[in-house]
Figure 1 (cartoon, rainbow, N blue to C red):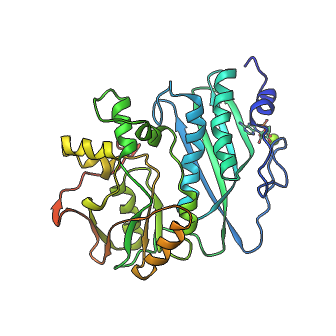
Figure 2 (spheres, rainbow, N blue to C red):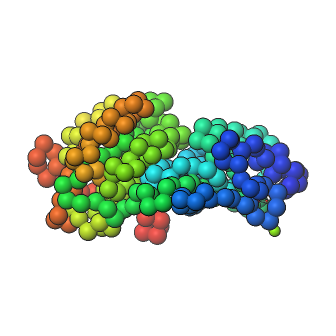
Figure 3 (tube, helix red, strand yellow):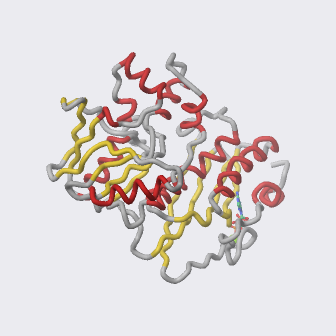
Length: 320
Ligand code: ADP
Ligand code: MG
């Protein structure tokens, strides 16, 4: 690399830690040192984005920096953890100044917005691949897991689904309704961190939707040993997705399209009013879409009629 590895790290990835997220020791030694306050648990997640698999190789670097962190913040949000720290493993074909500057801009804008500090990483040369590990804090015992859903709980979403899937069709050259908001759902997803924090003490289970509603809600159902019915007429959808559905009747888009990064949670009905109130105080909304039931399996209806389900979400080892 024309720019030395250590100069590159110093130039692009040494960035002041936001207040409250200062590590004991950050970038520059063999390990970062992090302090976990007593009474809290550390939530840890990692995701890799590979060029050609998770993003188009020519996607703009600023969006990529944003998305690489956003998908990890979404996992922290799904556990009701507060973002604190991240590490970044970057494999680059070459050290391109413009690319690195834009990538770092996208990454740190989102990191700063959520009070997250980059505390270490690894930088190597090779085919473009980005791995971010995010670490967050959650009060002991209050993380939202997948295994707590009970019959009678309300199935809820944090916002519209299907937009990222529609944007992907557009990027693949299909003629579909599109808007800047729909494209942003794919390229700059906003992780639902505040929504996740509002669920503490209220939701019985939660997951973020990376592989599609049917697949990800399916994980809650499997882990909890329950089933659910989802009413498609209650799904929050962007206008462009509604138009696409009216034209095509293709319900696999909102049900099995991935990459939306909304949260799907289950909430005991007597807590719904409190959840509405807590969210409304932050200008946020929650969308009830169905009910947890004792009979296992996911059922999907349209005005009371059963729809047949699109199969599965994205599976890297089945879609080869
Ligand atoms: P080591 O060889 O001990 O693993 P490295 O030479 O890989 O350390 O990295 C030197 C320092 O720079 C370490 O503190 C590491 O965490 C940090 N670092 C390396 N790459 C990145 C990156 N892309 N972003 C942030 N910190 C990085
Ligand atoms: Mg070392």
